[in-house]
Amino acid sequence: MTEKKKILVVDDEENLRHMLQVMLKKQGYQVEQAANGEQAMEKARQGSYAFILCDIRMPVLDGRAFLAACTTAGINSTVIMMSAYGTLEDAVGCMKLGAYDYISKPFNSDEISLVLKKAEERERLKDENRRLREEVVRRRPLGDIISRSERMAEIGRLVLKLSEHKTSVLILGESGTGKELVARALHYCGVRRAGPFVAVNCGAIPESLLESELFGHVKGAFTDASQDKTGLFEEADGGTLFLDEISELSLPLQVKLLRVLQEEEIRRVGAATSQAVNVRVVSATSRDLAQEVAAGRFREDLYFRLNVFPISLPALRDRIEDVPLLVDHFLEKHGERMGITGVRPSPETLQALVRYRWPGNVRELENCIERGLVLCEAGALGLSCLPESVRRGVGIERRATDIPESLSIKKGGEALERALIVRALEQTAGNRTRAAKLLEISHRALLYKLKEYELG
Ligand SMILES: Nc1ncnc2c1ncn2[C@@H]1O[C@H](COP(=O)(O)OP(=O)(O)OP(=O)(O)O)[C@@H](O)[C@H]1O
Image 1 (cartoon, rainbow, N blue to C red):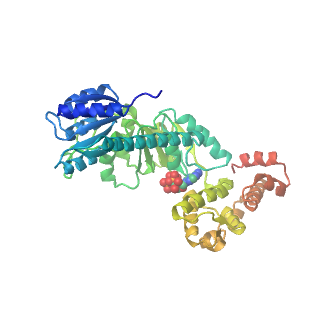
Image 2: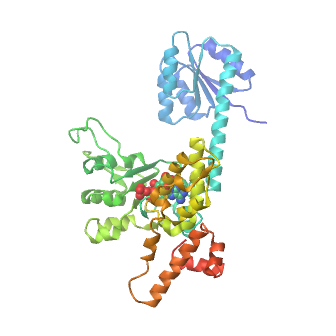
Image 3: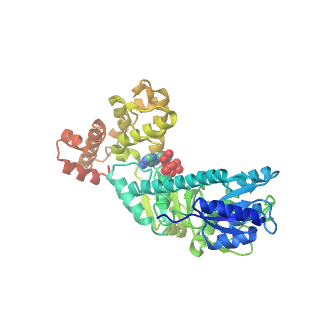
C-alpha cells in the first residue's frame, strides 16, 4: 500500500480548515492544520508535507511572508494559495514568490481535487526528469564529451577519479579543445554536482573589475559600490569555480588568489573580515603556463598550487579519428534544433573534414557543421557546404614540413612513418583496421604506433 500524501492546511478560519480536512481525507490525503503562517512554519520545519494549502490574508504571518520564510528555510513542499474574493492580484504575486498555483474561494471538492492532481502530476514529472538525468549521467558519465580516441578515454578515466576530490586541476589545451566541457564533467560527475558550477573567463573582464567580480565588495568600498556585492567565489560555495584563461590574471590578483586557495577564506573588497568558502577550483589556459612563469608573468607559487593535477587536452588534429564521430554528433545536435534531421556527409566531405588541420579545434568543427546544415540540400552535406579553407584541405602541405630539418635518418624515418599513419587515417575516416591494411602493418602494431606518436 502506498503511503498517504501529507497536506498542511493553513487558514485563520476554523470552519474552512475543518471543511477542507474532511474533504481531503475523503480524497485519501493525511491532513494537518495551522491557523496562521507562524504555526505553519513550525509544522513545515518538522514534517515533510507534499502540499501546503495556504490562505493569503492571515494574522501574525500572512501567506506572502510564509512563502518567503519557506524559501529561506529551504522547505520544498508544493504551496498552493487560497485566494478570497478581491485577492486575485495577491495570488498572482504569490506565484512569483514561488507558490505553484492558486485556487479561488469558495471552491468545491472537485476543484480542489483537480488542483492537487495537477500538482501531483507535476511532482511525478519532476521525479521522472531527475531519474532520467541520473540515468543519463550513469550511462554516459562524461556527459557531452564525445570521443573514441584512447587519449581522450584516458582523460575521461582521470576526470572520473578526480571528480571525487577537491584537488586543484589545471586543464591545458588549445582554444576549442573542450576545456570547459572537461571542467563541467569534473563538477557534474562528482560529489559536488548538487552544488553550483560557476565559470569565469579571466581574460574577458577588465582588470579593474575582476577583483570585486571574484571576491565581491561591500557597499562604499569604491565610488561605484552603491551596495554589497557577492563575488563568484561565494556564488560557487559548495561547488566548483572554473577560472578560464587563468594566465590573464594580473600579478596582484594572482597573489590574492593564492591566498584564497591556501586559506580557503575570501575577503570582500573593502570588508574588515574574511569568510570561509568551500570551493573547488578548476583552472584552464591555452598558453604554456610554465613559459609564463619563466617569463615572470605568472607566479611560480600559484602555478604549483593550481597545477596539482594537469590535464592536457590533445588538439583535434592529433585525434583525427574523433572527427567522424563529432560530425555525427553535431549533425544530430544542431539538426534537431534546426528541424533538419537525417543529414549525412558525402564521402568527399568526410574526407575533407578529416584532412583539415582544425586550428580552432572542436569549436571550429562544430561551427562548420552548423553552417553546413544551413546550406545542405536533400539530406546530404556536400563539399559545397564546407568553408573554402576546409574544402581545400588547408594544412596537408604543412604536414610535409613536419619532417624535421635535421639529417638524422632516425628522426626523418619517424616523421615519415607518422605522416603515413595520419594519411591512412584520413583516407579511412579514422578506421584503424582499414588504415592498418593500407599501411601493411598489423592492427596491433598500428595501435602501438598511434600511442608512440601520440596520435590517438
Ligand atoms: N569532445 C567533445 N564532444 C562534444 N563537444 C565538444 C567536445 N569538445 C568540445 N566540444 C564543443 O566545442 C565547443 C568548445 O568547447 P569548450 O568551450 O569546452 O573549449 P575550450 O577549450 O574551453 O575553449 P576556449 O579555450 O576557447 O575557452 C563547445 O561548444 C563544446 O561543447
